Image 1 (cartoon, rainbow, N blue to C red):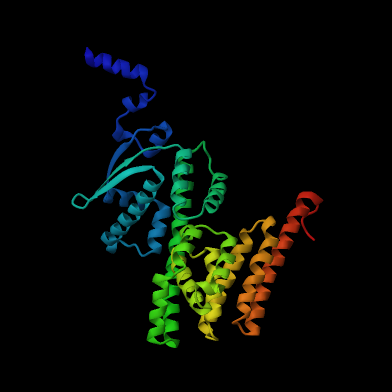
Image 2: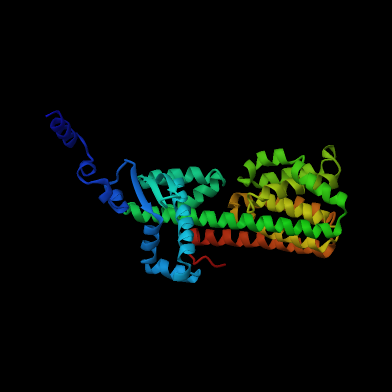
Length: 369
């Protein structure tokens, strides 16, 4: 009797009737998403089951064949599937869909706790994650573009779109960081050809113990934030005799920028300051000039892409002119003129784009001059 009343009370007072009537083991992820439940579900599945279900998928089978899957190497490919599944589970855990998971190496089973948070909850979780690594402005821009694609009426599709965006973020940033690390190694090796042991020791000392690293880390929030005012601040710091000799200051700035760029290789503040140090310290060393010009182009292009209309003239007066004045002291005329033309071209292109936007908004034209 007590049991009857308990069940009767539950049925009358719960909004999750299906949670009681349908056994957990019969529900698929799509069923749970449809229920829009806040409960946490437990699921157990073997790696062999995952493998067989994936191999039955034509799209995945095509992918498998491209990366070398065949029946003879089935056991090795099952291990690849396990690794891929762990990547997926980890990313779903970051988004809050998976609450936790374990893998039993004896039974070769995954045990997964998962739930069906709303898309708003997923987006908030994703936003918090992104802000650990990128600036608020970057995160807001990325989420604004993502929100335009989301279909709140289809939770599974929305999960897929957010998951894909997270995966792209991983791929973009991991690949860039790897490329940056490789570039640093190659650059150090190239410099080693032209420098003595003492100079290489100094180079490493400036990397790990730069006198600018603390302030530059604070001003860029560890490399996440990009403010053009930071560039002029450190142009002035390098020129300040109270900080040390100009060459010494450039070497310390080079070390600080190199270190922060390892984690944030797209930060235009760091790219522009790094280009300044390399070009000013090159002393006609072609490898340093080439690397410096690479940072120069990337940094200034990114700056003009991100600057708003109100800031364009201030950039010209407060960054463009002082920056070129610094380069003028060390670069040969030909190299200096190349730098001047690149920045001036980016500046005029930005002005034209701004003018075309104005014409499209107010002039009733197609935006052409």
